Image 1 (cartoon, rainbow, N blue to C red):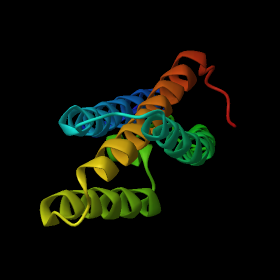
Image 2: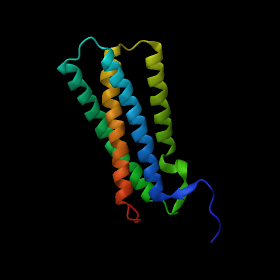
Image 3: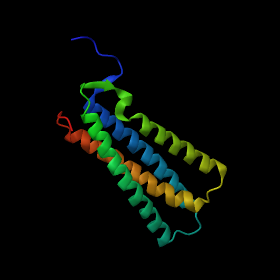
Length: 146
């Protein structure tokens, strides 16, 4: 058996990498939302319900995405893949657009603090939950194709 390239990992490890990336991103985004909640003069029930609605909408989307990526990873023929293959090209583009848009939105000052609080808290919690789901997929991985 030949020597495998340095940055190649087992398919199961790709699930762990995806979980860590999504969990860390989610925690950071949620942290920004919670910090913005702290700047509001008053937090009402409507704010919390709106954060929950954002969480539900994005949570469903990220749940479907994590299942899709898990099936793609498990379907690889080779046991070892480059570590960056936890995403496909489309997912990297979406991630870059979301990050760039979020940074621009906050830096531009166009979004009021209440929007940042509500939206980022819901979105961040949904991202973190997707990371947890990838972690569960990692723990349940049995080495069989999807």
